[in-house]
Image (tube, rainbow, N blue to C red; front, side, top):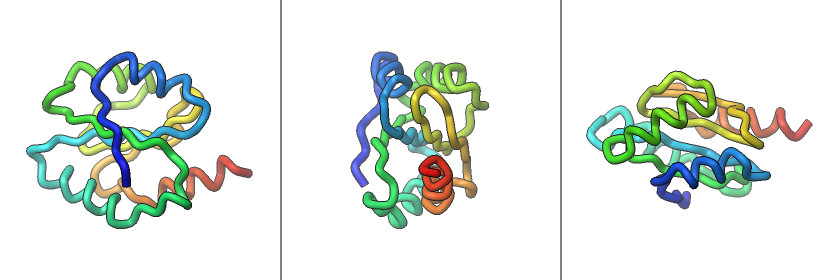
Length: 113
């Protein structure tokens, strides 16, 4: 899985207007639960089943950006957390043990129909 670091408000605006799917993983680098969620997602990831651009947000270094994400996509901030975005809409917001590759692919499948 290839992560792009999410480090600026400009990137966030680009994600909001991107034509395809974007995935944001909000990660607290000091939290073992966050680390386990990240490793589990990466272990299960299959690029061909989830055509998304994946972004990684380091919460400890970019707290303000995390707050902007919550406001922009109308979600409650959690950590760890994933957001699946398409055309400015948050299609999936999951945190902690609810973060799963299967859930992402299920949401993507419903969008195809």
